[in-house]
Image 1 (spheres, rainbow, N blue to C red):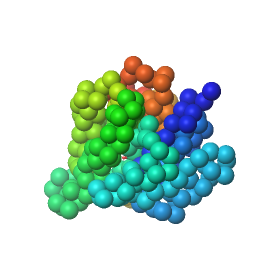
Image 2 (image 1 turned 60 degrees about the vertical axis):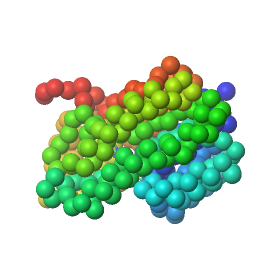
Image 3 (image 1 turned 90 degrees about the vertical axis):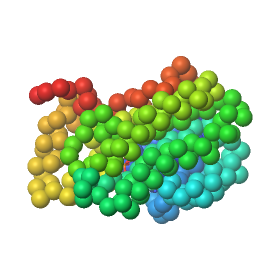
Image 4 (image 1 turned 180 degrees about the vertical axis):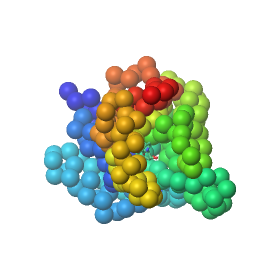
Length: 256
Ligand SMILES: NC(=O)c1ccc[n+]([C@@H]2O[C@H](COP(=O)([O-])OP(=O)(O)OC[C@H]3O[C@@H](n4cnc5c(N)ncnc54)[C@H](O)[C@@H]3O)[C@@H](O)[C@H]2O)c1
C-alpha cells in the first residue's frame, strides 16, 4: 500500500522546482494531485506527466497572492476529487534587497505571496479537512527563518513568519489537522539560478555555496519533497507544529 493512496493533495507553485518535485513524489505515493501555479504551461505539463505515468492530476491556475484565485482553485480541487487531504504551501518568490532599497510595493508583493498566501490557502482548505476530522498542511519556509545572508529583508521576514504561523495554527487545529513547516537550504532550482545570476562572479557564488555544504552537495527539489511527503503521511501522525530543516546540515554549522 502506498503511503498516500487516494489522498487528495494541493501543491501551490507546483509547476517548477520544489513544488514540481512535491507533485511528483506525492503522486508516486498514490496521491491525486492538484497542481497549481501562475505559469499555466509548466503547471499543466506537470499534471499531464503525472497522468501519463498512471497517476491522477489536474491543473488549476492560482496566484496565491490573489484571494479570488485561491477560492476558485480550492473549488476546482473539490469539483475534481471531492475532498482535500493535503496542502503543500510551496509557492514563493524571492526579493534580494535590503530594507532601504525595498520599495513598498515590493515588500507588499513578497509578504503577500510568501506569508499571506500560506495563511489564505490554509484558510480555504481547512474547512474541508476539519469537517472530515483529518488533514495535513506542509508550509515551505526557508533557512532564512533562522539564519540568513545580507540583502534579503522581506523574504526573511516572510519565511520567519511562516514558521511562527505554522506553530500557532498547529495548536488551533490539532488534533484533526497537522500543520508543519520545512526549511530548505540551498536547492538547485530556477530561484537559485536567479540568485546566482545577480552576482558579478556567478561561479564564485556556486563554489562558495558548495563549500558551505556539510553534505558536500546542494539540495534537490526531491530532497525537500521527500520531507513534505513524510510530514503529509500517517507516519508523521504525532508530528505537528514543528519545522524540519532539509538543508544538508547547513544550519547545524556554527563555524568552519
Ligand atoms: N530554491 C531554494 O534554494 C529554496 C530555499 C529555501 C526555500 N525555498 C522556497 O521553496 C519554494 C519553492 O522555491 P523554488 O526554488 O522551487 O522556486 P522556483 O522559482 O524554482 O519555482 C517556484 C514556482 O512557484 C510559482 N509561483 C511563483 N509565484 C507564484 C504565485 N504568486 N502563486 C502561485 N505560484 C507561484 C512559479 O511559477 C514556479 O513554478 C519557495 O517558497 C521558496 O521560497 C527555496
